[in-house]
Length: 482
Image 1 (cartoon, helix red, strand yellow):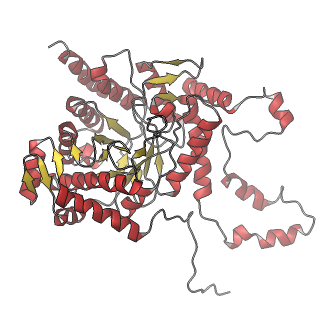
Image 2 (spheres, one colour):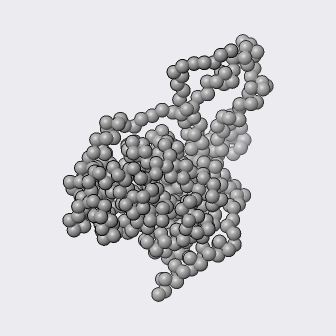
Image 3 (tube, helix red, strand yellow):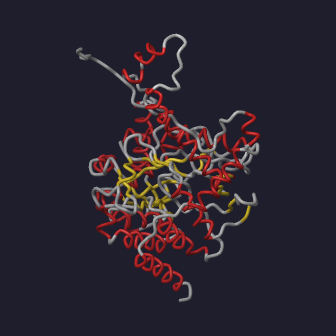
């Protein structure tokens, strides 16, 4: 029988648009106006000289960037960035509206999943956290999690990088405290992949750069951008402002201001090396809570920068899976689920900060394990709906009849495993749940964390590579005594 049809339309995933093209263009034009008329303050002479050579006007350290320079940069920047694992396998094709998930970096405290104690982290906590990330199936990349207090804090980033490369094959989003730390991170990654060319061709590292605001760029951030783009390595360039404090309190104004900085970074990266991979931020400025004067993490105004990134056809760095709650309670799980779902529906590409408690001041392995389950749920929800003949199962329904059972059918055996099954969320009957100890979600998460830490063995680096990496750490330590 012929199956010819016309104008057939099926959704391969959930459909959502955060802003219209008109809204996105208005923000874009506002950003261009700031660059052209107000200028951007830069604190690095190399960056200023590069922009001037490219056609910008310069008045001291204020640089005025014409719109044409921005438009030209869009013609050379890649529209997708692919991150690889240690085995040179392309595991994160960052493009379109594909989402990938991972933890955050550099929290000041950890809640111990074994004791429930809030305490200062040590380097072994970073090691255990990276092993956990390596084991969890829905965690796609790693970051440094927390600041270890048992090493010198000025060079802790180099210790963190060694731990990450030794304990996971997954891609690394690298945060460095200064330029030497970024040099070390790239040198370590080059040692793992077999040199600078090999790392550029199969990047397992992406640099994460914070900037003061969209109109004020500190020297170190600019130097990191020039270093990474010069090597052809992926970088995330993110103005880190707070709406109502150092940007307008309105989200349109806050995003437009920060977006001006994003476009400035884009222009610089392409002037420095055409075709350098560039990732823009995917979360708007956190609106300051004027009652507490804190900047919340689990705020509901999300998806604006993702909409801008989709208009630009650039990859976006987002944030989800975090909470402002101080403990792993109902607020924590609600905010984690809401932020993960919002970021995913909005089309965020690299979604980080999974496992953050207390507005990014504390890390929780239990919460990370819960996030892993929630990401699995979201992945199932975001799939398209199969309406094929096999899925409609009319022949199976006819055979079963009005009072039939489907448990023993071949159709059920073929398809039941395609459904999502949780690792932590409770689905037993009440009596069965009681017989298993009446555990809470937090207790089950703690047990899963401990089980994975006791059983999962990350793929080790070759001994000679481990030695090269450790020698870089020792060299950095030696600089403290010079």
